[in-house]
Amino acid sequence: MEPLPSSWYQAIFIRKSRRSFHPRRPEEDKIVRLEKLCREFRPFPVARAELVRKSPDEVFRGIVGGYGRITGASYYIAFLGPEGVPHVEEAVGYTGEGLILEATVLGLGTCWVSGFFRPAAVRAHLDLPEGERVFAVTPVGYAEREYTIKDRIYRGIAASGKRKRLDEIVSGDLAEPWQRTAVEAARLAPSASNRQPWRFAAAPGSLTVRTDGGKDVGRFPKRLDCGIAMMHVAVGAQEAGAPGRWTLLDAPDVARFDISA
Image 1 (tube, rainbow, N blue to C red):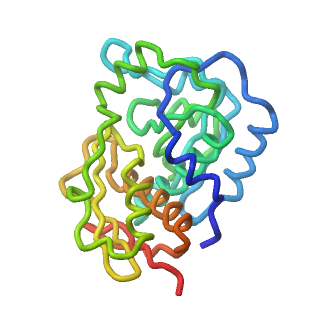
Image 2: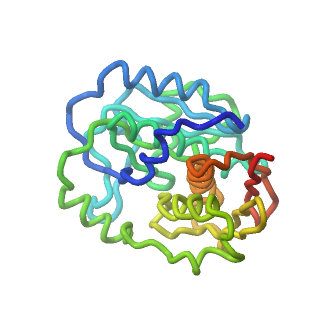
């Protein structure tokens, strides 16, 4: 695979999901840069992303009491792929997280949304081919400088500051320094309701990602979350001087990362 931007590693540590946005629109050069990345960043052919230059107000719907509703964003990005194709969910997660890390580098706020949005509203904005599914979306814009009460309540509900310990998510020894860097980066990946459904198996020269077992609930595929974590693994491994490539695997495994010889 092509090298990933080195700036994405730092973005992993500063990215926070944001749901309340400032009315000020992002500068044109930043949006053009994201549009270009949407066109060109296709690490897996089955997944793609498209930036929509429209208000996402019609796309998002709130949860009980309105908490969690996204408000004020200037634009949004749709994460897309063909329905029912093997490995599409992890490919969408991996591709989409690259866009979200780049938006973070640009100083823009984002938030993965894979359940509480209206796919039909996205289709009204985009001319999608038959059989292509909207797997998730993210708002894009300048987040409110301070967390609003709504943001804080939602973060509390999701327990987004709590991360599983390494011994809860890793089997095998992290004997190679790059493996620890990669897994520590993956621990910070966002996931639906902060469920962190990824598990990692370490072996010489590789890390295998698998789900924690169990079935998906509604429109929250665990393999999509694992694809997001895969991006963090790849960025962390590259930062530690161990770039590599992914091999997609069948369930219950998701993918194996092998460092380059």
